[in-house]
Amino acid sequence: MTRAPRIATISDLRDRTTEDESSGAMRSVQTAEVALPEAKLRELWTPVHLEQLARTYWRFLTRVTLGVIRVVYSDTERSVVLLASPLKLLTFGSPEYELDPEHGVVRWRIARGVLLAKRGRGAHGHLQIEVRRVPDDTAGEARLHVEVEVANFHPAIVSGFGRHVYNATQARIHVFVTHGFLRSLARLNLAESKVASLRPVENPAKSQAGGGGPSESRAMSARQTPDVGDPGSDEP
Image (cartoon, rainbow, N blue to C red; front, side):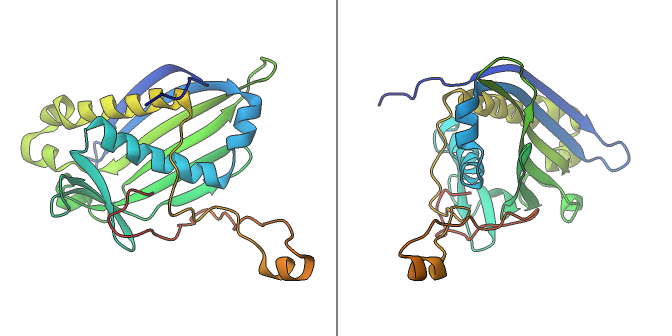
């Protein structure tokens, strides 16, 4: 299978992992700078492509683990599982989206899972991907700051074995996978979403009155969640 060509340049990958001393919650942030043609960014800066970016993250997780880790769905949740559904490593709520002319966010709230300590349930933990436009003086070029954040996360491994074990195992694996995902964005090969809840929809009234007028995008609110796909699918 022919690989997609590299369209963007990925640079300045960074990692920052900190612990809130008062609560014990972990925050892990991985970032990268993405340079790409301005015309390509204009093409991609839509709700549809934000949803596809979310799907691309889960697709990468499955691919980099050779299918050992997968994402399965219920009507209201997404679960990261080891081989099969009964072993749910982490379960998230449905994604929430934000998009304006300067930045976009997709966020999943952490609900439960074997990797989450009991005190982490209801602690407002989340995983999110944020893309933000940054100034670029090069003609015809655009630049993005991309950030993947896990916040307010209480790892079960810390409760059982301590912070040092977490840093040497789970935290290190997370950073390795996330940096791999950020590097993969060089090809801008975004995954199609079968859910496609943010895709523009036809206005029935205009279609009937005008013989098929232009479609209209669904409203993008600060906490919009898309319709879910079939349980067991790999869509965001």
